[in-house]
Image (cartoon, rainbow, N blue to C red):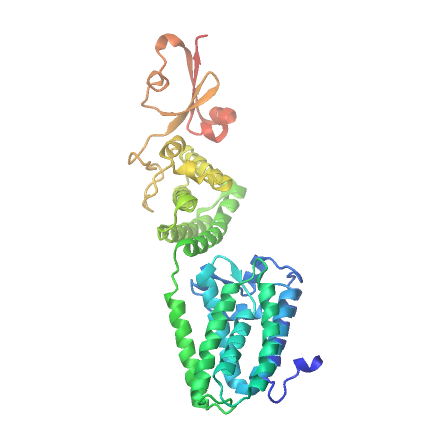
Length: 451
């Protein structure tokens, strides 16, 4: 048993791979990752293969994921299979071809995994191990030196190990695409080795031939990686994660401002607001590239875009107000924050479709999405005008009815005539906000009708 962990002649690379997998698993345990059933987020954090990130530049996940396992059972089954096939195969082809094949099969399994379903985190050495299965099967099929009796003994042992892995693979959550990718690569590499040796088993493959095999295999892996499409759900998930990170970072200055209030100094906060504006700009640019999602995801992208643009407007106004020593929580800033709150609630509650509806947008009077960086905070554009007047809250008999501007007559908005109206009261400033909160930031018009 313990001999399986010790390198020796004809069995050198296999124990190194075995010990490497065990070492990674021990490190995972020391990091607090579950012994039995780790979470997908934990597996991703330590190098799991996750399409949105693997295809966005973190190519190394194709390799690191092959040394990570989702619990002790997953590890034990894979290591049992690795030792079983490694003891037979490594002594047949030699340590260098074995290592090259193992790595290329592992990478191939990772590639097919994210092509098949890139929205899940893939881990495990099974892609590489199934590649070894495929390679050994090809050797047995094409090799002309070994007798049938010798081949039959190897195939019987191999069939037993494959059967166990296939049985385990029937469980939910098993990455069978990685198994298939590794198996296909192993069959191809087995054929290449047999071609190089004239269909004879040998451990004396030339160093140049090994380099050429490894180089050609890596070129194929790179080409497939480059050609895999990074779009649709994969790009949406990646962008959503990046947006969340940008938002968390950008909001720090707002939290600090809320603590100091009117004591905020331009010298301290203007640079932080500028950095926040840049983060909102980055998020806006990323979200604008997503044009190939449908349904609820499409609605969410549209809502996130407006939310980001509103945040940017708010930060620009705060920056300008600090520069000109103006009150920060002026009515127009409160109007924008109220609009942001409507979007944020819709995102949290999963009601993006309601916000995308134009009537809902008009109800909250969302400022337009394009405001020049040097535009004065006194002009906040709306979807229907270049400089919309502020809207006051309209309340009839104690019931909120919406908003109206100063140039609109109450009778025209409410449908009431003068004889039906008993009184009209206009509330402003603190009085309006004391009664109606942020909704009263731009004033309140109270109408009492005759009973």
